[in-house]
Image (cartoon, rainbow, N blue to C red; front, side, top):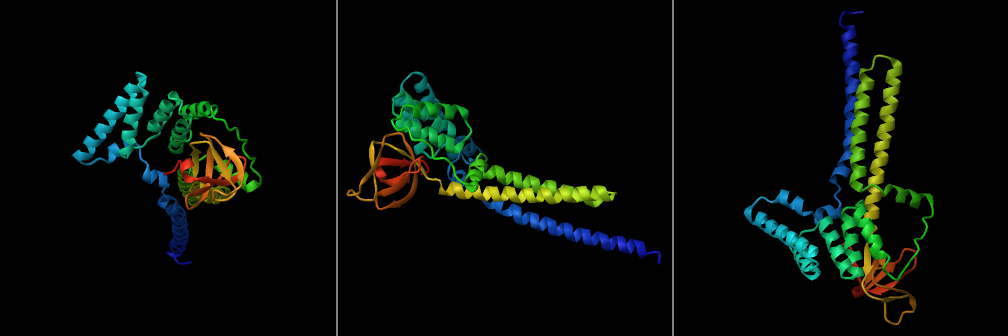
Length: 298
């Protein structure tokens, strides 16, 4: 055995492990990149006033945002003074200027509720929840407004393991599943490094097995993020703004299928001419004129 034989074998083993580790990192990046590249359309199109303040890099932007803050404060004062029409006017001016936030929609929902404009109240509470789905105050107030609607439509039960699983994973957003995927990948890489530096065969087996399991969980998280994204893209909610007869086909000669009243939430399935094909919570489907409902995702 030559004196340099052991170092040679050690270097060869090290190169093998490094090659496997590089391959592991490359596979990890393949999983990470699509998650990082995906952007929720709402995050691109709807930004809160605070986010826009951070993006302001010139005096004109800062001045414009200062004006919107002044409008917001004026609207809050008008609301506290029970001058609801003036508060609505200020809030609408903020929206017209392109500023959107959960708080803004929540306040508008409260103002319209005070004005007994139930459809508009529900509409803005729902828009607030699109930006912040877990806001319990908004959920509570939305429940109050929904109790004032005439339609009490039972929700269709979820059938099938696939639909039940999708309903379960939608408790987390696409971004949350994406961040979990990235976190698990880094944990998996850490476990792989512990496996490489472990001194005993038992420890090596443990860390290697754990690294594989965590990596598989990261793949599951990525799959969940993709499923939530696809479900979000198919989600097109709308609010009915007047008593409407839902027809069996997209023309005035269609047979009346059922009737809806203002404030009812529906899903838009497709559009044709000036008609929307809609579905309600119990699964019934029909056609409504587009001017009878207002989509929440505009």
